[in-house]
Length: 330
Ligand code: GLP
Image (cartoon, rainbow, N blue to C red; front, side, top):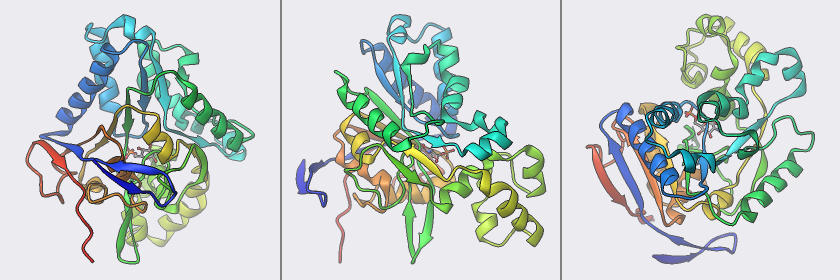
């Protein structure tokens, strides 16, 4: 371990990251489910950190099946508390006009994809409140609750946000809603979402008919079509005028410091070619422009990807690798 002086004044070690390249998306989800199930089974009253987004959905389905077939210990499960990374601040005017989009809150997502099936009681489903009238206070309370616990989160699952090209550099790769440039010492905070993130997440705030009108696949990130001028003028106007305003502008997220300090182990999951640049950048070296690269500051972190997400790495073959930060050559 090397000790470095962090720009914020905090001292954080630099560690290796364990990289698992899985032969398929199904295998990736199954391995992640096994890691989480093992943590649940081997921990008394486990605290588990969950992420939202499309990436962990199959893993959650597998955890539910494992629970049904008795592979997840019922006693451990009855003491489980789930902690989510982030939540939208849903605009009241949008919520009033489109009550159906409340189903896009992460609280709803967690109930539907995991908690209801595992019968996790409401008071153990920890997540910032999307309907709060004081998001900053909500964040401070969430941070305090996380830090007051006698035990840390056994494993925190993390998804990976996409990258974007800015001034010739690929930046991004968010964890939670921590956008590029967020301090690695940050605590739970309110964040104004970047245009890039809002475009990616707009797919969750559209009906299937609207997606069809825009020529989008069901789970397609509209970014390439939007930025690459592949929308017709009509489609672009429709996207900006009718869709983008609905996507929340603000969210509450655990900070990167929160994630690093309050978890015993971290697990980033990513699949598909669309994440390959973010995976590559995250595994270079700690760099605040790439939030996911903060994992180099945690002593027990794993990145699990399929071969498509590993496409830009030196290690593309299925297997397990130890990734040390690449020194910056100037
Ligand atoms: C969202 C969430 C993240 C999530 C990420 C990736 O913005 N705030 O927590 O990990 O995007 O989402 P997906 O898995 O759908 O690609």
